[in-house]
Image (tube, rainbow, N blue to C red; front, top):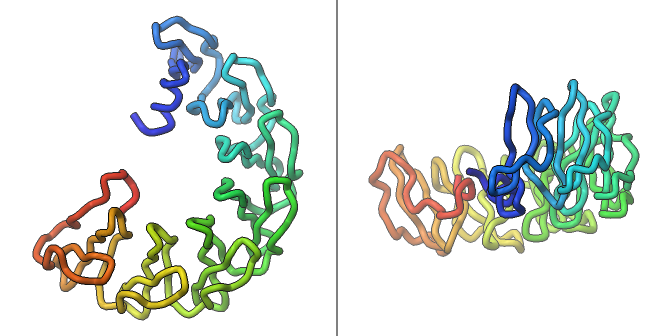
Length: 255
């Protein structure tokens, strides 16, 4: 069971399927929302995303229809905001079903750290929780904020911005990953290393592959063999294994 399903079960709602249709039961197996939907998604921020006849809408946890299925696309709520799409344009709803931002963008991402990334034409920017465009679309690509910084691509190189849109780590790397535990993987040429949030190269790019830090450790690969380093780049486990070692206990957060 994934985290969202666990959260749904903890809320007392469990997705069930009867005769090809989906609804919800309580933890005793009593049906509380009749199976009638083509698909349902786990409860998120108190809302349930549903699909009927290729259209998407939302229920509250009592089964009340808050948003009738009318969108071509919808994502689950994150930080009390949900992406919805219609006729190729994307915007955001709040939990009441009201638009905080009418569908107007070519693409939109889930909210993360109070910001939602949006695409207009071939450029990316960000809106805030009120739906206000706070960082105008100007980047060739932008990712979600993580630990207060978002990775962006400008002119073929990658760097990082803060929530004001300022380039706090100038685009200089061939590829970067999001920050985790104050460190981010970066690629220069064919090698990977790590920087801190000031942009300082803490561990010089020297690895063929590398995972993100978790609990102060990261898996790294040299010449086809995996080992494990600490935050200073010292080997805790020398490269010797065919598979990544010192994996993060938080599933999906290592590599």
